[in-house]
Length: 215
Image 1 (cartoon, rainbow, N blue to C red):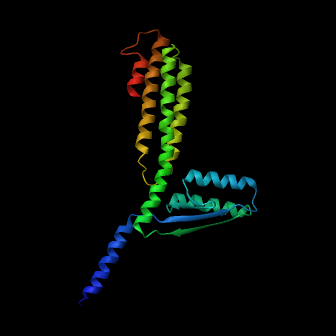
Image 2: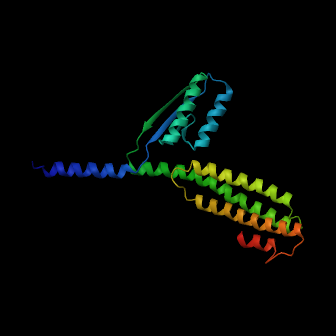
Image 3: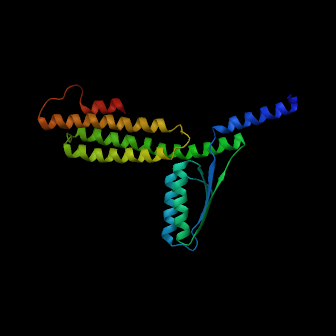
């Protein structure tokens, strides 16, 4: 059987379009109204959708990538909204236009970048605190434990942002590097505390100098 050039051209266009769309996410269009539900429901919905990194299109309408872990959490959330007396639904949509899809991805990434930027902005404060405590001769085990707790909160904060970073926002690398600088500075601070407790002279430059080196 011989196909006409027109049919071949149509097939090529179709396959090109399908191949280009193959790497794209579909989206969950989520609508949740808590009118008629207890006030706590509205807070719970807002917190959950925020933790998932929802992109709001309207006050009660948002988008999320249609990925299995996200879909399961959305379904549970919407079921709880209905059980509380509210109304909620989720539709799966495809964005075929490449420009519109790119714009949506850019908006998701802009929100994650803003969150990553907060991590980067907080890191110098952590480093400055360690340097200050070292300069004042207060490198103690108690201070190490306190700083470890702060660093753990930093790490958890970064992990939460990364869990909703669906499209690999560019700010992620700077945030990870900032946390690693904090981790290295804390290790140097702990070395100073151990040496001070043992009454041993420090090997190498003092901790404050090392902190400046990793900042």
